[in-house]
Image 1 (spheres, rainbow, N blue to C red):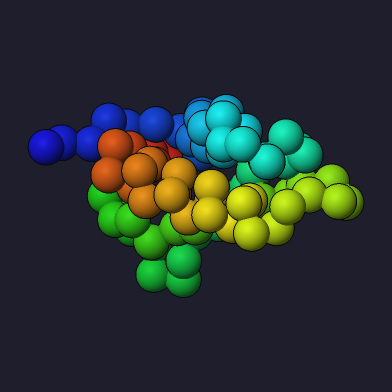
Image 2: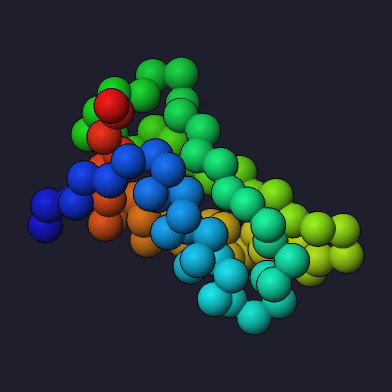
Length: 81
């Protein structure tokens, strides 16, 4: 299955929307994509950094971020512009 190309900004918006769909993640305010040191287009060498307000359920946020990251890596390829 081929992955759809998406910009970094688009991926961050998609990730934020998907993470916020999990119960207990309402206090997530933003997402940042960080590339690994050996990132090349077509690879999945990136990770999500989640920024949340104080008082959030960290276990739920971590679960949502891991699950979302795994899904997005299967569906999308980040294009560098």
